[in-house]
Length: 378
Image (cartoon, rainbow, N blue to C red; front, top):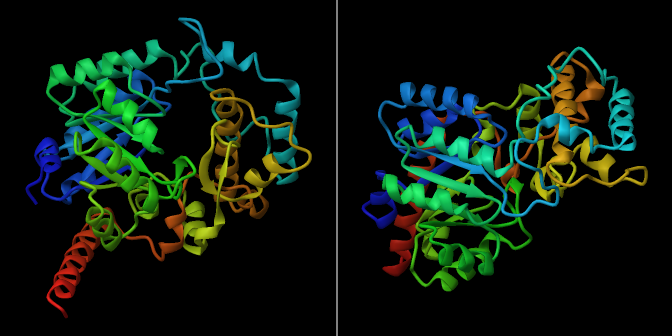
């Protein structure tokens, strides 16, 4: 395919794969798609390690980086704030709630399964950390930089232009897309509520044409949210999207960072087994429903904390849960969850990334043939 988006990214097939796993990013790009490394939670040092590995394993194919630099946070931190500064704001009630929940599922809440983060580590989501992450990203041969949760910082847009690469942003509503275009974003990802992770409330089938109408062709628009097959990708492009931004489909691949237990739960799950919950990050994020998400919505819940405080209590807990579940703890398995979209109902097995990309290409071509046949009266 020779489209504006393909030329921008140096690709032939506009299938973008967001993943927190470097193996997935490299495998997708080598297979003909475009991997995007999700760097949320990385320190600059960790990001350097991950991108250096991708550079060495991607065979010169293009890839991108997605940073999580929220535009709006309830909890603001001063320059130089550390994880310890944030942790001091978490109430004993919330800590006790998590510890009791783990104990009820036979998971040690205090020791054995999780290496506590360095309390002197800088806060991941503050602007100065974002600048350091950009320093790292732009030292590597990335072909795209994206920002989640709001308009990218002005410095990201300026640096992207200086390096000659496009800057993308995710939106869940037409008004958000208009703000992004006005700010100078080059690519819009219109993400429906079906998506895994942070998402809005409008479905993909509605938000994509709304955003397309709003931006009036000024920038390419990628469709996202529940897209698991090449036929879905073709349907979105028939609406006018320039390609597809995918995430959940890669969680059920052999290269993915997900645990064997979670992959098994994905195969068994149906589309109604996901829920939008603040229980993992403090912001509404779609994930597989589990005893963890149920507990935060239950009558005994103290209520979720704002981002990023909720993550400081959920991530260590979920690390212990996953370790216990992998060790055969059946009760811990009830708590196992991860960010995944409603497309999980289409997961039937655990293929390789190469197989997934090939499947997208085959189904996409079949869909185009079917539409051509319809146009010819077939």
